[in-house]
Length: 287
Image (cartoon, rainbow, N blue to C red):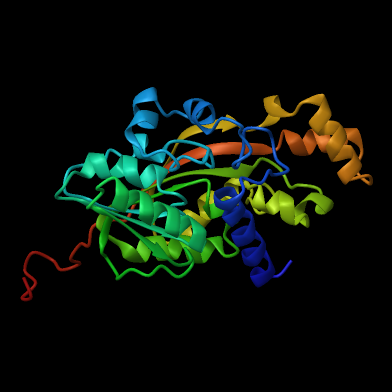
């Protein structure tokens, strides 16, 4: 699958979550498949107070963690949410940075931007703005934000190295990155990797764990720490879903399907863009 085909498929899929709440092929509580997004979010580290704090319609159950809770946001900070969707994490972040802070959400799906913008306007979120754009080419200036957050979105990018370079570019020196995302313990079978539905369900496009961490460090980030890690989705695969998978991938054995089902991990990662330092010796005439 080429990049433009993938992006078009992902955009169409996520527009569907807004317009008709279409289902996906992943586990029943992953990537927007949850019949109750609130209950799904409670299982990902959000609290009842988080669900009550955001406008109805902002939480679509699309995440795989709670980056806002781990980002230690401070009043007055500028926060960027990569793949902001309908605005769930952006609205939570806005209350933490307060009226002197600002939150910017970037998403490539027009329907997501429209919903998030309408919710922000209707509920008085004056410090939140949403911009249409791709996370591989962020519509922000260099060194313009204090914190970058993302929730189960980078795995959907067709160029993850560039995405992390862009996050590094827009962060101020000393800025922080906090992402929740899905990665793989081992490679997936090829039929699954080539399945557009599996890509949109945040599985087929996921990187191996080591490659994901290398991409963050290669972008220039330091102090990388995996602050949370757990298997994702293995306990959610019912016999009915596994039978559906066997019909979808007839060339894969039950053992292959079971191995693939257990290959996905949810990671919560933090890293830092180091402050600029002067290389001069104390006697440097430049000061």
